[in-house]
Length: 215
Ligand SMILES: [Zn+2]
Ligand SMILES: [Zn+2]
Image 1: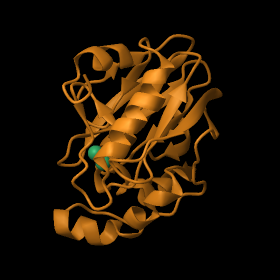
Image 2: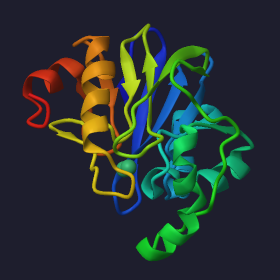
Image 3: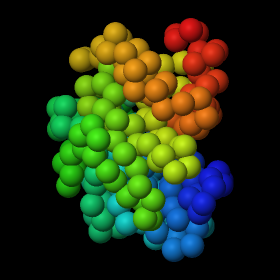
Image 4: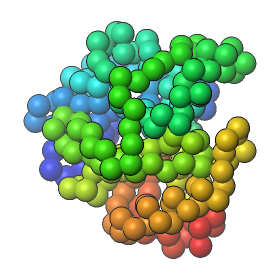
């Protein structure tokens, strides 16, 4: 469990054969929070929700890839919550989830968010404010959730510890990805930490200094 300052807490549950970091994020006082990128293995996610005792108020999606979004429809129905994100440009991915799931052998349902997100939009998780950065490149509709108060980000697959998101998928765009990282994420400052879609998290400063794709 990651304990952030000022009452925001996070727990990571790796899901699907892609070991995607489904993240629970909640306020430690009220226990109200969000499930970020429920790609699958819903029984593990539900067990984690029960274990930490959080009350999910919404589902957030960073982008439309199967390992992040395949379980969103079923979890939405189980929890009776709304889905926010990603950006509308990932609609084609969310519309294709069932087909994608069949080819990867992952149970997946087509899902349509209750709210698409745009650059500059604001989202709350347990009363904590996150602003949206639209960071296309890995997918056209990838968004990063930024909590300025605690200098914390939910990164999805835009930037990893020592790596960047793949851009060899349909509509991937390497130049757009590098541009988004350097102009939008680096501008936030070195002390921002992040949880990303796969593997361990990092900080902007560490990646700016040492990430071989960016130095
Ligand atoms: Zn992805
Ligand atoms: Zn992923």
